[in-house]
Image: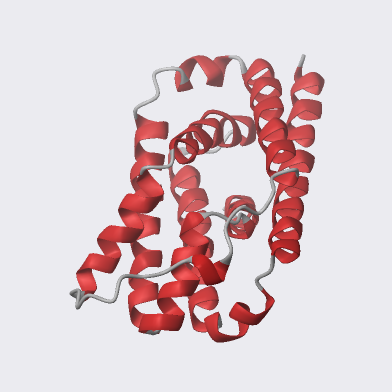
Length: 208
């Protein structure tokens, strides 16, 4: 159980370092509207991730096959995760925090939850990422059903907690969110994914 918690927290921290549209919406909303609307956006994003995790894990017909072919699953999954990390590490910052604007119309608070859910859901790479995770990490680690649940709970809890911290610290983050800062954030997250992907490849080779 402890291993599932620690690995879930580790994955959650890596995901939280990724810079994208959700990051900018979260920071901008917190600055303009306050912590509560930004927190609702973070909850909406978590609900979207939980939805995709459910689809990826319980809706994947290949999971049983992968469980019987852990070596191939680990190598293939490791290659995909490492490649995703390389792409992320070399990704350029295309959006500035100052350029993001939240409409000033009087919206009910629940709208922010929906915005977080939809903004995360329309990104096709989110589903692909969770499919790779669902098809490799729990299989590679040999997690039982309860351990898988704990792993994802730890991952989502970590992502949500870090998003809350971002929202709470938005006034300070506004001054440091520059193109250079965003590039280094992506490099750190990308490097972590590369290392994890390589470790999966090595583990898969050892199982051959």
